[in-house]
Amino acid sequence: MAALRGPARRLLPPGGLAGLGLPPRRYRYRYKEKWAGTAPKISATRLALQNFDMNYSVQFGSVWPSIRVSLLSEQKYGALVNNFSDANRVSQELELLNAVDFVYESQKAAWHMQWDSRVEGVRGEETAPQETHSEQLSVEQTQAPSLLSASISPNIKCYTFSKGDVSRFPPARPDALGTLGYYLLDAASLLPVLALNVQPGDLVLDLCAAPGGKTLALLQTGCCRHLAANDISASRSNRLRRVLCSYVPKDISADVHITSWDGRNWGELEGDTYNRVLVDVPCTTDRHSVMEENNNIFSRKRLKERQMLPMLQMQLLLAGLLAARPGGEVVYSTCSLSQLQNEYVVERAVEVAETQYNISVHVEDLSYFRRLFQDTFSFFADCRLGELVLPHLTANFGPMYFCKLRREQ
Ligand SMILES: C[S@@+](CC[C@H](N)C(=O)[O-])C[C@H]1O[C@@H](n2cnc3c(N)ncnc32)[C@H](O)[C@@H]1O
Image (cartoon, rainbow, N blue to C red):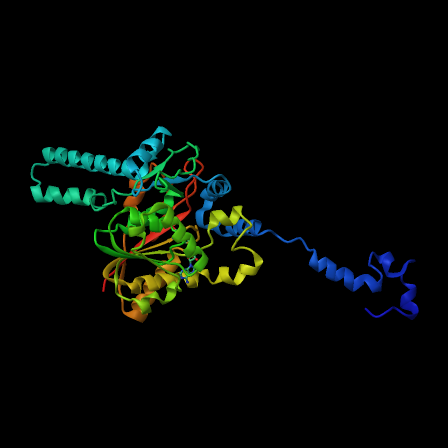
């Protein structure tokens, strides 16, 4: 501002500009700079929470406060039993802690449900004798089709504490050969692997694999004829190598083909190849984002990266679809609650696969997962596509979104 002269100068109170509460001119610009430099910065965790409050209160309505408080509370873990160690002994130790194998328990519950529906079918036959045997069969098949087809790998064993029990697992100990007995992870992150339903002899691609929890779970099925584990980050790929080294015998881990490519190009590099593809994409990692400043995607410097996430996710899913052989199955997953990163990405990838690559894709119904695993996880009932595990104080797993797609041709 130019110095005031003449009559205007007389309008100033004693003390000049300082009397108006402004600093003397020689300090003014320095003051302004300093003010800009020290403006209170909102932490990334706070920014994440503000963003979630704005978006998720609309998406989840009255359920959001319950999800919110759960995200801010201690997360629950599951102990994935390592079949390459003394798995029976490890299971016994985990059972002594009062933990239960949620995969096995869900299978038991499924068989009971099927048994009940059969008994109902027989009862129905008594009251409706005109129904033929084949009609009765088709009734049974429509009553419990998804449970019958829910072939969940019996080789995956994961122990959790029951709902409301907030006990923690001790860290796994190495056995005499140095192999660890279990791997601690968010138990909900096994659901995408279970949904992938790997069959004996399958060629499997884990497109975004590091640090390797799901790769390890895929190996536990004992079904992969070949497993390609890729992650664009070389340092994270090294973490994956270390995980395999601690859990898997050398001859098995030597068969895992670890690469650090940009997964978006995979379809061009190795198209129409795999029976099963897991696309566990980078996302806003909602739980981490509200709890940890470190490596937080809501930090200002990562704004562009955050804005570009849905595009990256869509490109990765598309690459996964292209890498699958016709008839092959792809599971897309995130640990975010965001519809923009979940259903919208799936819809867009299916559309682009059809319009630009002439590939038709069928989105599978996974609603039976809700029934199978209702005793362990809290599911969102209103996903348009796929399934979403909601964090809940009694079962504080997730968020975990997963959606299964079958490439038709
Ligand atoms: C959610 S994490 C994967 C977690 C892993 N599946 C697990 O269960 O341990 C997402 C991973 O995607 C990787 N990533 C990001 N962009 C990628 C890209 N263009 N191609 C391949 N991987 C990518 C990140 O380095 C990160 O490790």
